[in-house]
Length: 600
Image 1: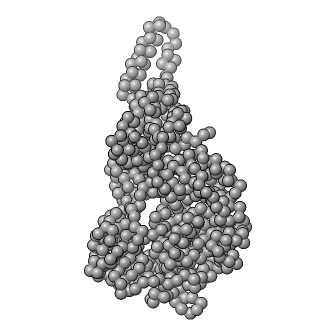
Image 2: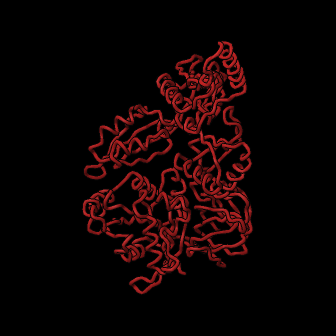
Image 3: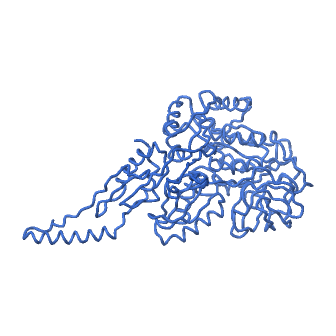
């Protein structure tokens, strides 16, 4: 098809504003999917995506649309992930488009991630088409929300489309607006090939399947291609388009969105953001913006049964085939034995991996409390990065510990201004600025340590603002902090999985609260168990889990005192043996107790 008849666009929205439902209606209206094949959230193929109402993996689909001007157009819809953890994937998907449909919920109005994704779209020079969704709901406020969106974008409110994706109201107007307002792709078919990889997945028969947008030149099925960042040459197994299933073609040209089945065995070799070029006539420079997705949150994952270690390793390797941003290395813990230290893009990414391990691979696992990556400067000037508190070297040789800080934007109704300020300052955050993008809504900008963000911050924010506030964050820098190791000992043995790095001022209170919590969680044994918190080389808190005693004299009705002594001696021998070989059972809740230390 001629380049001027192609439109590449994406749909951006906050979580649960109707992005995937709108994509379903567009597929139906263009006849890409028949009513018989239709399921809800077609492009969200994972069960988890449907349950949580969040797109986790990006996907693409080609639709053919006959417009009212009598012309046929090729519409390439690139569905983007909606969660802040997958921000890099969103930015790459936006680079593959010329326009974005901005969906705003008529009941909720603008939210933090609406703004975050909108700014990404504007940075990518995309044409933005605002659309107000869910106008069929009784609580919808389409006129108010249109004024908000109009003042934000400088768009006449009366020209903003009002739709209901669920009921199919005014969907044809969205397609017409895409054709009329979104510009066709630019590029020259005769230039050397450059094609952006905006996502990939692993196929057991075809190897890594890269989702691409051709920027310059063209690809034929017989061409040898080169990955410019990885410096790897590949002979494609197959090239094709999504309609919405993979459909092989002989050629992809400027403006086309499709896939290249590379035959590669791991997603690491074919990363999101890399550039395909021709091995015979390579381009001079790759497309800009490529970077390695960097894990921000780390946690230990251990099998409940040691025999499941190899199964857990296989499961993580299979997950990594489809998700290059998951990293893991083997780790041994005194308390939990053999497992893996895993790196995630964020807390939501960690939750997704945990659920997939339990559901898809039927594994019983223990996940330790998440931590972040710290920079440690020793007295000799050496800088090392640690992602587990147990790796922290001796305090005597540490010059300083630096922790990651984030830029945090919170979008909230103005009535919750005070409670949001209180929450952030309690978490060591500092206020930077504020903006009023819409009447009665304020955007507050803060700087905050990542370690404070990953501990129930989002839940706390939602409960304080009755669910109205939303947030977005991005990495700022590493800053030195007054940080110490808080060590927990159970029965005199340090439990590395319960160790945490905390601010020195908080060490005493956190140690006390954690010991109190563990005292209730750890089951009683046949002997007294001491639970202690230590920091800076001294014990700062202690509690005892009382022994569970059996009354061995209950059946001894009378008789000589020696009978009773004999029974008590027998019990003492058994208890001594129990104490000698017994190990304290620590349940899963104890490892997550580190997370839930908020003030009651």
